[in-house]
Length: 312
Ligand SMILES: Cc1cc2nc3c(=O)[nH]c(=O)nc-3n(C[C@H](O)[C@H](O)[C@H](O)COP(=O)(O)OP(=O)(O)OC[C@H]3O[C@@H](n4cnc5c(N)ncnc54)[C@H](O)[C@@H]3O)c2cc1C
Image (cartoon, rainbow, N blue to C red):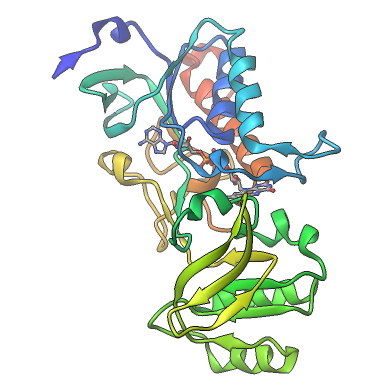
């Protein structure tokens, strides 16, 4: 394996992930004058079709993809920030030696690391499923519940999390159906009673095909032959935190695999910070990712100051 000798010149921080969390971290580090490299494969949650209507400052909403484009353009003003469109496959190291990154057959080096790799959503897969994500296939009530008030909503999932989302969506529309889309049904009797009382039917079947066009789903057809008309599908089938590449760092993760951080986005490993969807299951919003990225950058920057510049 080659070593990128040009990169052994003192990169202050490597940011892994170029979504809202990673771009925000890179921006804040850039403004401290830090030399930064951002690795990004461009495939995360912020690359679907959704219009983000709950990010402050955009009265008509903003496409998250557009927000990323604007972020990259903003970073172009800082020549000490570089982008590498590479997948990081492994990271090892510690603050004494620095951290080494394997990507695209090369090895890079940096003094600190910000993890911002996001999660992989488990959306239902049927032909052309990706064209619907963010247009009529969603997962988050805070993001897309409001626009679906009074509409036909199909919630997909077989757990209490799915049943809970169906009940929450029921506060916005009384036209909710729950489809388990699994051989399993792990919905507790407590939630079953609540769904029944609210008039939310449960369909025990799996998805065979979808009907729709131009990103607009109109119906789901099940393997058992049910035809479920809908305006919006909310997938509550879970997500996997993207931590495989960074396991070598040994950062502590919680029971669901999310990276544990303190209030300043410090992980359990000194010099390693984490921000955005990779850090917790309940704050998956662009606003949280941007805040956490900026906070992680500030913590990393402070860490990099020599002792004589620190008040404590
Ligand atoms: C359909 C949908 C609708 C949504 N609507 C809203 C909304 O209305 N409002 C809102 O606030 N939020 C919304 N969200 C959530 C929001 O998109 C996420 O909270 C946000 O994108 C998280 O940002 P992030 O930077 O943590 O992760 P991501 O945006 O997922 O970015 C992670 C980046 O890391 C890269 N990456 C991963 N692993 C590696 C690796 N090993 N090497 C290099 N790069 C890597 C990925 O390719 C990706 O570009 C929505 C999400 C979806 C899916």
